[in-house]
Length: 378
Image (tube, rainbow, N blue to C red):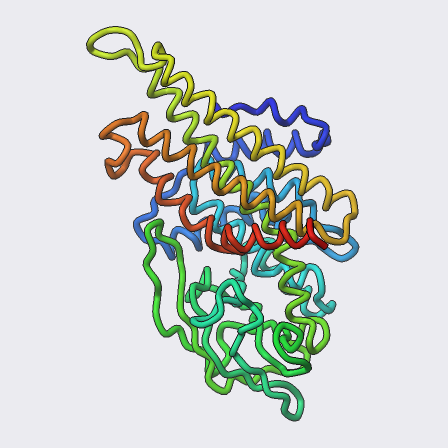
């Protein structure tokens, strides 16, 4: 079992330790799942996570606040057992993050559906011409009598094609650039919404390219106020970027465990790889990366839970370091496995494919560097 001594750190309360223990038991009994049919696997995972009550942590009920430490613990643990389970949980939170933080009572009614696993949510921000630079969003929402008409495209949308509802960001034109965006809650069955293409990536997940052609939404679909879209998107990412780091940490812990088992395994010629000082040095580096990442992640989560309005710098540091460190840890785990490390079906090979996207989504590593630098220079 992965090292859990970090739960004794002062960032955590007894309820977090209780949650972690219960989650370990659930994961041991239910994960991993068969990834053969990714759509079916994700739907099944959402239902199972909802039935187990784990999805209750993905959003906050009326009068409640998101517990970011719990979000991070859940993502770390799920990722260590099954990357697709982490994905299924994470998207219920990210997809409905805008509603949790800014939704009206009527919009928040959807949270009961997503937090019980009865509905699948998605976060539709990225566009073919606007990835990291949200200010370049081209999808437009034209104000008409009684609501808005949306036209545009979104791509690399997680849960695209299987989601029941999307939070979509579009240009309403209150001001140029980022200040002219708004956020909308859009049911998947609305006329004019088309799944143009399903996107296959190195670690399969449900991803899609979407097109909106004269999609009509009532005024009640608007989240927050017109022009609040960029602020809403950044507020959501402010919370969930730390949890991306936590998922990376889960992958890194699993890679370290797999590497430790490998180097302790007796060799035909006698002895074990762990006898070599060079191997010991690699193990030390991997352990250091894991603990440093964990400290940054749970520092950011603890700071947010303590009531900080924004944790942009802390969350950017956590996501940047944890995802980059996890890539290094997993790469070394592959190296220590020798030829078996690149063999399909071996855990470290799977982790190698899983980790790569985390250095890109929810703000690529270089974007995090810009966020950190600007906060230091301000």
